[in-house]
Length: 578
Image (tube, rainbow, N blue to C red; front, side, top):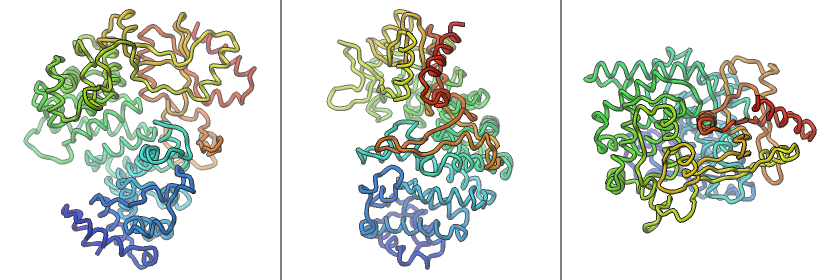
């Protein structure tokens, strides 16, 4: 049955009744009689066919309160949910019986189907790189890529859970929620070691990534960046591989080598990943520019561009170039042409029809604002500009004729969704105690940018850039940087012993905060600012602000002592004056 199901999925034959009937064979009662390959084939086929368990939150012990999770009778009531549950229980019970491909197929199936199972993923990580010490040496390049993707996707699925439940066990959102979810699921030390092992296995066992297909490179890079984990030798090597392969492709246009040709989504994921991790890659960007322009027929026709890229992918690539401070002229002009055409009002409807996307998403509009400022400051020679009436009319249509971004500016509108953390509030109170005049969540609008710097982004005032704590008169800004502003360098973690003090001190722990659970990140360790934080710092500096960064671990180390906090903040102000 499992072999037949695998064949059906591979040949893209999808019949819901067939898949549900096959799934009903793999139950808790009969699971022990199944071979590992039979179980992995079954859940892989179900995920490939899009046959999703009815109760996708049934196993989420991290995010979903116990009284809101499904009961055992619910699970056994749906054959696909029970099938997934039975496969998971068998991997947890007898992991040594499963081959590497079978392990990665089961984990991939859970993440692909949107089913979170923290116990399964922690158990497998412990088996591979924890006390089980199985290692990753027998994983194929595809296996390593899928393994990394499955873990990253598990954490990212908090976005789905937050839409389904009003009262999750954790209260954070955005990038921090992904980081916290991963650590609460698996543990910070274990996930760091797993990803360090993935990187080092790829480098040492697979010819310096020579045997990684473009999809494997893209999946793995995206997974590291999504979890904020950075292995510098791995990313150095990926950049070399991409540049080398695209160069070979340019010289041998007639050859169809699957190891050379990158899909548009893989290109966009690679650039986004390098920018998120703030890892320089000028040569790779130049090779991507040449490749993309060639694939898009020179980049002058929007239809040729739209045939390969979605507009949000183009916006991500533009943002990546801005973060990495490298602007290949051919690529940047192609991106602007793909996003806004010639910039005429007549292009609005034309591009919406070509892309069939309803207009630019709000995130893409915000991205274009940041990119345009960076281009004005760092690459004026390219000669790029936004449409005169931007973003009026260009935004995603929500209902009727209403735009996400208003086209008529009777008052200032905002692209920002602001929130103030407890850490930021505590820091603000400290600055108030020492007499530093400031406001919290100071926001800048496009009108202010035009008046003070001559940079025109929009036809009316839009708030788009904020500072956590700001003394507006003296142009001093304080950015209170929590864990989401940083990435974690994991070079060599896989080889370090658990008794290593530096390793031990850098790992956090779970703790209760009211009715929520949070992950308390600790220590400076090997953290560095991520791409979004670095780009924002550059933009604010260009706009005349002196920016102070207050890292979360410094504040944590002060232990709540008000006198020490005051002295610390006074020193920050002295440093910025100097």
